[in-house]
Length: 472
Image (cartoon, rainbow, N blue to C red; front, side, top):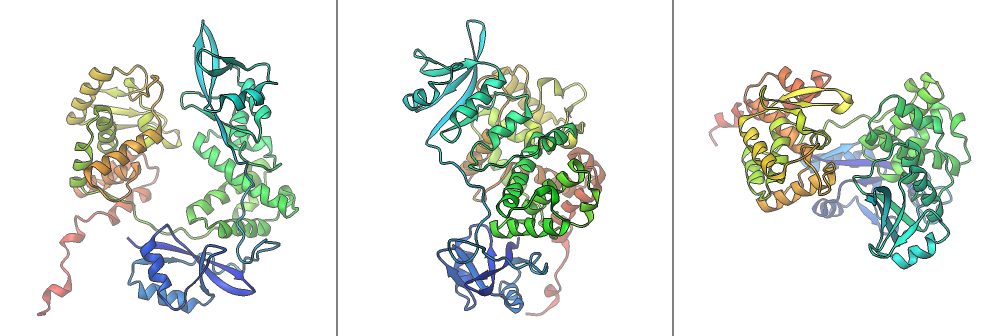
């Protein structure tokens, strides 16, 4: 697979240059530095060359197809100038953040039939000083934790009382109903007086966007509003041309990949199109062309090793189910015991991506594993539960896969989604009709599923190279 390298035009010490960004790769960095064109600015931590497109052509040829040069930012009549930057060169666009030394984790607890928020911390004495003025918080010496009545408004009071001093995080089983309160948790780390219009969050929730999408939109839009404020522009009065310049400036300065840039454009456009009711912005804001990266696939033999390396039955069952049914990680942890229909030999996926229901097959081998797992763990509501009988977390699931890959000797840094890609590709190679694969994956368009035809090696490996006919 070619390694994507992103090119950004900018001005460094009054000279037009190209900056090069790619994922951490020491051999690639050393190879580029070995070319006479490249220089490295230690102050800016930036790899760059002169702003000449023939250099890009040379790199592409010299890499012999191992690099994919992304030039989407080069032809937009936009050169980054580091205005009022403390050092020469490129200045990142970042919202100032607090530096926290104290962290408090909010958990839920029931004591004497009364529900409380339990505040756990390793800095009890310092928290006593900070929380002393907050009457709703009481210290429990026996448990060495702080307690406050379980009302969401109390979390808001807590955030206001410890702003800039203590980082408040929610334990995975604590769920909030208020979207505004969730946004307060998201931006508690920001040391900036920026207000996201309340209609923005309400509109996203009304459209039934997923919690992850809302959080990603909020973070991108917050950064956009902050930058508008730093250059003294009212976000509501920004023209489509200015939106182009601002988004491209942020993306270029921060080294955003194409997908992250698209996320910011979506978040910003949502404000103008839906909240301010300006649909004309959609056709006037430009997007960088997406690179056509192929999905990562793990060979069947490697997946067998990874699954067999799991000594924990729950872990093995979870990873087996991901691969056996092509599920997304969020779909797996949302599965309930009642979603498994052993009589019809199917599993019902309720409210998958896009809030769409679908049905996937339940293999006999997987059913055996699930029965063995159920007998041992006896889950109550969710099929896979955490230590407090709450929903299992995606982060824990990632750790399970990472540990399994390490034990199996699989050296690539695999992701949970690779199991889904492998499921689709292996079905295709086995001769399964692509329309059935589309249905199993829950894709709205067959074009999304067709990407796996480019990964499948079933037919490509059978094509004979013309080299075979040469007498060499």
